[in-house]
Length: 491
Image (cartoon, rainbow, N blue to C red):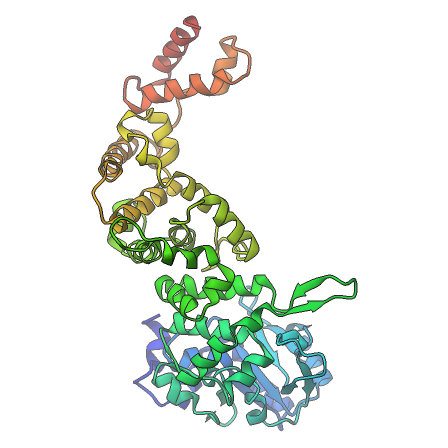
């Protein structure tokens, strides 16, 4: 975000403390802080984590993360319930809080100060960490358990002071991901932090500090640790859903960078070996299928290509289809990857929401023009394939694929033909339709009234009438009914 309130605390314009203070003053969900300090004069409330990090780099945070010290947890819960909706969530001591007057807003995460340590049954997963809550614990000790320095800062909302014991601000300004304290220990505590680091590097376009990067690569296998349940079955200590989540969040921000990072860290080899194997698949122009996949992703991000086919930009679903478009078994391998890593886990309106069904359809049809000339298609079939959002994505994917192939082909020429036909039909619908759509002149009910029993022939009759409508052979309902009668007489 580059405008509005955020301009007041963009990186260069004010000291860090002032940027954070401006956010606190302007955020509706934090207006209760004055009342809270009145009721708890010894309390400390800190902005922490991604909230503070985003403020300091000039981004508008959607989520608000707080740590509250020197308040008894039961008293804190009672106060929150009196001033909004509050729920205690999970074993890590976090309240989800929506203040009165903020209905519909994202809840605030309010954490209790805590230390985390490795117990006898540690499995390199966050859930296996031992946790100890202490309302009087210093904020510096609470920050010491965090993953990366850029996430290990706090802003004291009472005193307007930035607390930065691990020099996270320096790393933030240096565009650097660096572990808090010893990286090997951080990743042994929770192996998911490796993927979080890769995700932050992609989302923020940051580099990774050399010792942190070395530890990431050396400890990547921790993500495949197994644990035995009481019934004797084994499970991954890091759920595959978490791995898919971290990949998607980085991928939708910067697709090419994310894939490259995952490959260099050997995460791609562990979780999407089909993609890693593309590097050894050398095509006739001596370029690997892996590098052509990266080319496809880069092309899909070019707005001029997307706009040429009626899109404002490539959706997460289209980008993921581009990533998987060079797999030898296409939709089958894509299905295996998507189900194993839970790529469907985000809702459709989420920034990383993937419509797997639509993606499989795109992969199924991406090579359509290798065998089919769009000029020979029935207009009704062309309409079903290309005159909708899904069809615009298919043409965009085809376009990127053909350019990345680096060679002239009949299929590439056919893409231009399809774009021309699509443009003509779209203009026809715009001129003669309603809201850019061309209503059908007949329905199945008309066919039934003509004495035809329901069956497979319905669809052919409907499509033949639609063909005539799309080519302007008929323009009104009377003509359509006359055509229908003539076709039925020929049966």
